[in-house]
Length: 119
Image 1 (cartoon, rainbow, N blue to C red):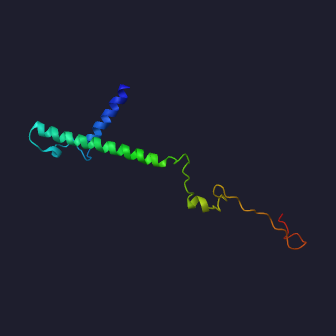
Image 2: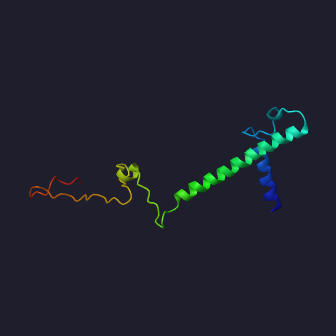
Image 3: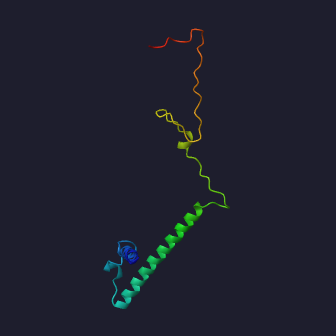
């Protein structure tokens, strides 16, 4: 369990120090005189990081909630045109739910039975 916590903390540290919006690793982001002023800048950058993480979490939750059924009814997605109208003559496959057309052989028009069979 300690390894999981250590890995998550290290991941968080690398995100904060990366070349993203906060970029705490770069000293050019906090050119001020004194430890107090530098601490205030770092605190503001960390607060910005935390607020972005919270906003991303809430956004993900909203997107997840939008995918859930409304009033207990599941959301029915429209069938893509490709799946609705596609017929592959090479493999002779049809979309799901489409019945294969009847390929019954038509009887010969005369009493001879049609052309001679190949042997």
